[in-house]
Image (cartoon, rainbow over the protein chains, first blue to last red):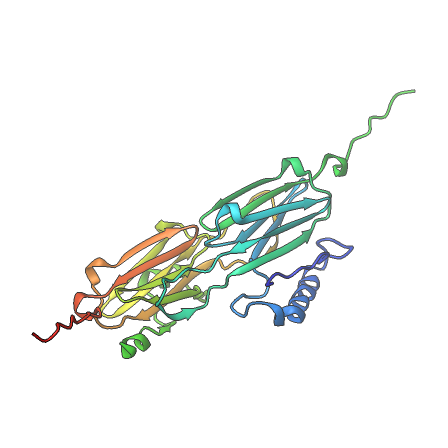
Length: 150
Length: 137
């Protein structure tokens, strides 16, 4: 098993103090690295994360992973990207000179500062990069309350 | 065969191709991760290049040096703030010293799902040949 789980990397103050949180995440990986495939960089896949008022966009570098081998799971305010990257199948009798590209199972979870509208999630995969748009659920959007004249 | 095998050891050279150098300026160049294996008829190189469009990728062969170079364009979003950036945007380069006996005219490159696959066929003279042993008459 080469997957790593961390559930609440952002703690209770989403987005604030990001550098410190990221350091904590790195430590988590360090602690579990012994169980990981060595050729995997800690935190595979590498992820970029953007935010706006109404959504979060996550992009993940998943070169050589078939899009049907990628699993995106949304539960309330947490999104989990997981799947399997298959090994390059060298034909029998081939001599391996370099093996730097990692393979195996991967899993990363991110807790967002809002609950996700699961039905509105949009995911695309192109050039080995997965892009997932995670809209804020209606329940967590600010609502304007009209003041009735008495 | 063993000597040629060792020669394909990769080296991330300091000297980037001209184009990559111009584009990246002072940014450090990343080296993509690669797998290399050898069969009886070819060497196969696969490189992880997520987010690299075919048009932003250069594969060049100069003397016996094969170079993979290019650029990942950083994604900009006007209405969003970037909160976490682990991806490798910018220039990348990786060079290999080719072993002898490659059929240069038949080198093939394909890109699929962000993975470059190079097939370097061995020339006929380098392929192992089975010697048929005839029974003595």
